[in-house]
Amino acid sequence: MNAADLPAREAMEFDVVVVGAGPAGLAAAIKLKQIAPDTSVVVVEKGSEVGAHILSGAVIDPIGLDRLLPDWRNDETPVRTPVTSDRFYVLGPAGAARLPNFALPPLMSNHGNFIVSLGDVCRYLGHKAEALGVEIYPGFAAAELLFEGDAVAGVATGDMGVGKDGEQKSGFTRGMELRAKYTLLAEGARGSLSKQLIARFGLAQDRQPQKYGIGLKELWQVTPENFHSGLVQHTMGWPLANNVGGGSFLYHFGDHLVSVGFVVHLNYSNPYLSPFEEFQRFKTHPLVRNTFAGGKRICYGARALTEGGWQSVPKLVFPGGALIGCAAGFMNVPRIKGSHNAMLSGIMAAEKVAAALSAGRAHDELLDYEAAWRSSPIGHDLWRVRNAKPLWSKLGTLAGVTLGGFDMWTNTLGFSLLGTLGHGKPDFAALKPADRCRPIPYPKPDGKLTFDRLSSVYLSNTNHEEDQPVHLVVRDLALQKSSEHDVYAGPSARYCPAGVYEWVEEAGKPRYVINAQNCVHCKTCDIKDPNQNIDWVPPEGGGGPNYPNM
Ligand SMILES: Cc1cc2nc3c(=O)[nH]c(=O)nc-3n(C[C@H](O)[C@H](O)[C@H](O)COP(=O)(O)OP(=O)(O)OC[C@H]3O[C@@H](n4cnc5c(N)ncnc54)[C@H](O)[C@@H]3O)c2cc1C
Ligand code: SF4
Image (cartoon, rainbow, N blue to C red; front, top):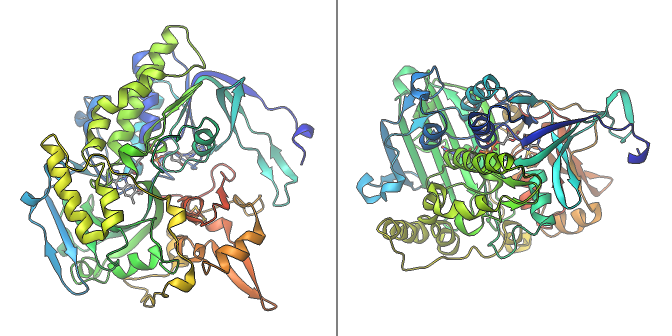
């Protein structure tokens, strides 16, 4: 279908367009309306409803909520389970050693934090935003950036009703142009438009490469005897080898719910590693397996998270807008927390946008947002932990985490002996050729405590219109065969948590199969493909997981 032959798109004008209804985008929208109720603000969200694509732990630091909605504690909210107990373990294959809480730097404490479903928190924020007059359009993916000269001037939502072959089907509807004086990108980790913008405006120049992890999560309803409301438990070590970063979380909250999850840092080198299988194996450890006895797994999903922190945050502003939340990389890795910084950055950007609008400005750079973040609470949060991830990557789990803990302690006291360490290579460049690595034998799932990918994806309620162009765009199929398959033994079949990629033998030749309808939008393929040969682009709006409360 030739773009020139298409009917023109309808356009709507706003003061501010926000891409993504996560904590960052919704906080920005709410703050804008609080400051200047007449500002017109629209939020586009690719999930079928607000919260449908949100996957997090989540233990939240309420600093963001306190700033945004100081009275939230008097509201009926989904923030109801305070943390009552906080445990950290190092696991071996059969045993576990608990680290005493006093040995952990104070910034790691969860005292005063809450265990939530972040999806439900976003639904609550969505209602607040709508009550203030924000227009929220769920089911619409921002597929294209609009420009006026060199400045971003809004986004266009994707066309609906395009077939697999790229041709219009009956019911074809052209996307909408949402034009704005300022555009805030709140797409979360590895946003598809954010990636284009960072490249176009060179926003990551002079920064360390962004680092990522993949987080896999299941939600269980457990029996009353296995439920301990407010318990927060983290582990590192087994089943991961010492040279693979990552760890687990286990949070008890709500009505006998346990969020169990596993994060694997995406700079692992063995292409045979499977984050999904490591997660399943983790659940069999004697420390945790009994939690799930007699319980029921009710949901599954996965999502990438940013891990580069202070050194990797790109320049935040470009003509006509800014990056906020995890699209900017404001995740604090040792704390496994990013939602508070997502909200704080949304608030800060909104304040700068409101000031610019009231001064009659449009489409320029919000330079005071860029200038402010490093000395704000976000900068303070990320600065103290800036060496934790580089040390973990360089020295492995035991030595790296020990030294990283020591550095966090000294930073808490106001100094560091290490300065600011770099991250080295981007994650995709960390894979070694398969002939230099050993295959990892993973146990078969038992269907009770451990599961396979497909029955897991079923619990993510993922749904895509099947007759649409594949939204996982392989730039060069021949390279995928000659390198991803022949050199790296097809790691996409293992790192994808949803079984989207398969190499199947056909007439003695490998063929790359992409089951795009299973994609849970975690973005790992876009990050980890060794040749950066896969581009994740938004599918038709509303497609993807439908997480009820992740
Ligand atoms: C496994 C895991 C565990 C975590 N645990 C915690 C924790 O315990 N505590 C904590 O504070 N943080 C935790 N985090 C981090 C936290 O979830 C993030 O920091 C936070 O969600 C970032 O908020 P955001 O608004 O920037 O992005 P997101 O929450 O990712 O939201 C982005 C939204 O934008 C939408 N979107 C993206 N692209 C488009 C587009 N082109 N068009 C339309 N919509 C789009 C998405 O569908 C999504 O709804 C965890 C993350 C993971 C993955
Ligand atoms: S196809 Fe990519 S984005 Fe989708 S689930 Fe698999 S790894 Fe994640």
